[in-house]
Image 1: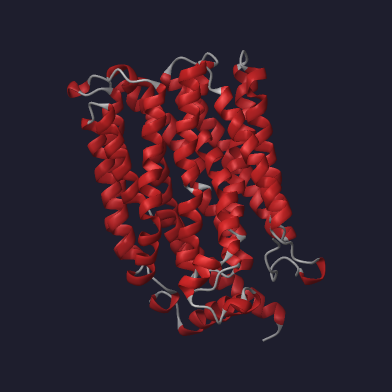
Image 2: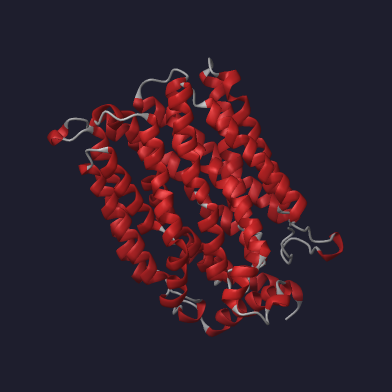
Amino acid sequence: MNNASSSSADDGVFRKVARRIIPFIFVCYVVNFIDRVNIGFAKLQFLQDLKLDDSVFGIAAGMFFVGYVIFELPSNLLAARIGVRKTLVRIMVLWGALTVVLVFVRSAHALYVVRFLLGAAEAGFFPGVILYLTYWFPDRRRGRIMSLFVMAVPLAGIVGGPLSGWIMSHLHGELGFAGWQWLFLIEGIPAIALGLAAYFVLDDRPADAKWLNDREKAQIATALNAGRARHAPEARSHAPLADVLTNPRIYLMSTIYFTVFMALNAVGFWIPSLLRQVGVHRISDIGWMSGAISLCTAIGMLLLGRHSDRHMERRWHVAGCGFAVAASFLLLPLTAHSVALTVVLLVIASVGIYAALSLFWTIPTTYLREDTAPGGIATITALGALGGAVSPWMVGALKTSTGSLYTGLGAIGVLLAIGMVVLLLCVQAVPASDRRPAGDAVVNH
């Protein structure tokens, strides 16, 4: 078989794989992110109902990531041992149940505890899926695949924003429940159903897939082995745990991811509050505007993912997105009296941070062999996700002390810009002579 026909055959089998597994995990991530950030909408009602303030909300939002960080590495190592199917059953059923439990929260301390447990339950979902994708797709295809997967986040905003606004506006007071209680109840149930379905829909590895024939399984194995042979051969003599604990690349990536995650959570949690602050008072209007921002985000990040794959360049794509987000955060105070200009900056920030998130993961996954990937990915996500705990606490505390969201967002913007500088200075680029044309390329870091 010549190179052209071989490439065409590979394209066919990976399209088949993508059609089989991406839609399901995409829907799972949509539900996951709706349940993670719906507290940002719920706060528009429950802070007043429970007589709490923004600093309490910031701590509660951050407590999720404390639990997430503590249980991230054990969860991902367990996923590598027992398989993704069983792991998703455990994770999704627990997080759906705990989302429903939020209906009955009546105090700040109860809110902190449930949010901590929710983070502990969800720990391992995102890195587990990242690990799962490395079992099915070679590195040269992961830019597009990661963009498709992470596009679930803005889609969660497209669906979750209007849905959350509608639930809180139209069901408030029904059967004696407040709108925010209906929000947690209705949005928690799908996670339980999807978790149970995952066991029957997904296969742990290509070798386990009955819907692939032997030739297709061999093609996938050949493509994956070729990618592994090109990346990280120098680490083959090291023990997996030693690689994780002593590899400075993992800590470098964790530091960069920390700043990305801070900005990601700032966008995810505070868009509703920002829209209300600039004059959008109806919860349903906030929901529709959030959905429109997310729609623009989905389109933008898909285009950026394709552009990055076409040119096989990662570092400048991630850094450029990060700098755009930082600039948007720093410019927000200048648009405080304009809803339209605020929305424009939020669109830029949202597109930039979610594109940076998806493209970031094309970089560390190429550094790690299959046996070290579970621990390495989990360590990066766990250490980086500390930014998720710091971000809402910082913004909430500064909002309470200064009366403005802009101070905290500006600080996060500066930290993100520093992270992007570290990325450009410390992550080595692939020499131009080593780059391959799109379709058969190594990842350019």
